[in-house]
Image (cartoon, rainbow, N blue to C red; front, side, top):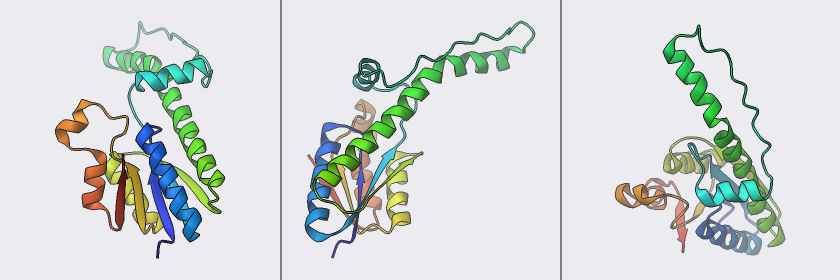
Length: 174
């Protein structure tokens, strides 16, 4: 019997379908759902960046330009990099929170009584499997394709890696 379902989501269409399937199973069996989002790093995909801007999800990052004249070149470069990437990091954090909130609401609307959420960092496949172990999940549900790029096709998809490493039943959704 399934008592706890971990559903991994990145906000993609396949992930939304995974949330719906997991919620349907949980609602009919009385299982709990644990929703996990692996924090993306770097620049957000264009579609998510546009959504964050259109919906005014992030505040404009203040650009404070410190006097870099007397700072060694390597340190000055790190400071410049941090300022350039501050908005991307803020967007990724806000989007992660939004993705989890949307998944939680979808599960609750489907009748799931207990829904928990978690943001994790790290390699997506490893982080999902570790979250399943920590939470004692009997099943992992995730989309077959997420927001990953062509690199995922070359080195193997996250869902394929999770299904090979998972300590429990793993369902991928198209």
